[in-house]
Length: 238
Image (tube, rainbow, N blue to C red; front, top):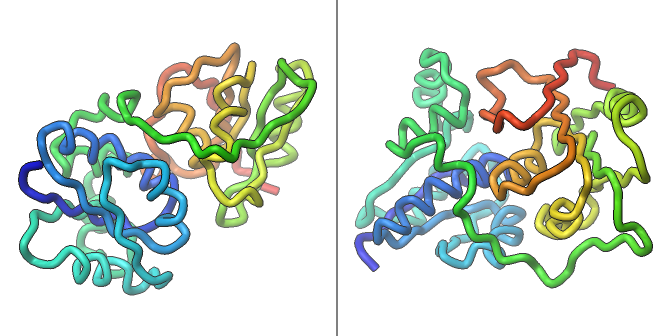
C-alpha cells in the first residue's frame, strides 16, 4: 500500500456509510485507510468493511475527534469529515455557511465527486441475516430513527395508500444494519425515513418496484438521495 490516510468521522452510522465511498476512492488510489470509530460503530463496520483498518475508540461524543487524532498520530495524512461534532465548531460553521447538504460538503472537502457515493463499495455481508419464512414478496419499512425520531403513523399511511403485500418493519434490536442486507436486497418495495437504511439501499444500488423516503429534516441536514425515490416531506413526527 501507499501512504496512510486517516479519516475522522468517528460515529453516526449513516454518516460513516456516506463517507465509505470517499474512503474507497482513496483506497483504490493506493492509500492505506485508517478509521477510528466509537465502539458501537467499530463493532458494526470492522467485520463488514475489511479493506479499512478500523481503530476502536471510547464512547464519548464530546471527545471523539480528539480521541481519533490521538489514535491516528501525526505521521499520516488526515481527512477530517467530522462537521457536526462538539469539537469541530469551526468546521460545522463552515458547513452551515456553505449552503451545501452535509454529504455534499464532506465530498467537496475530500475532493471526491459526489456521484461516487452511489455504487462501488464492497461490504462483507454478515452470516447472521434476518430471515422471514414463507414470504417471497414483501414491503420493508423503517419508521424509527436512532435518535427517537419516528414517522410510524405516516409510514403506515403511505403503505396503505401505495403498497401491497405483507409489510415487515425494520427494528434496531438486531444490533447491526448489515443484518438486514438480505431483506433489503430482496424486498419488492421499501418505505423508510432518511436514515442509515435509506443511505445503504441507495449506496449499494438495490432496485425496487417502488421506494418512498419520508423526510423531516431541513435540506442541509439531509443527504443527497438518488432520483429514484418518491420523497414525502412531513413535519408531523409521532
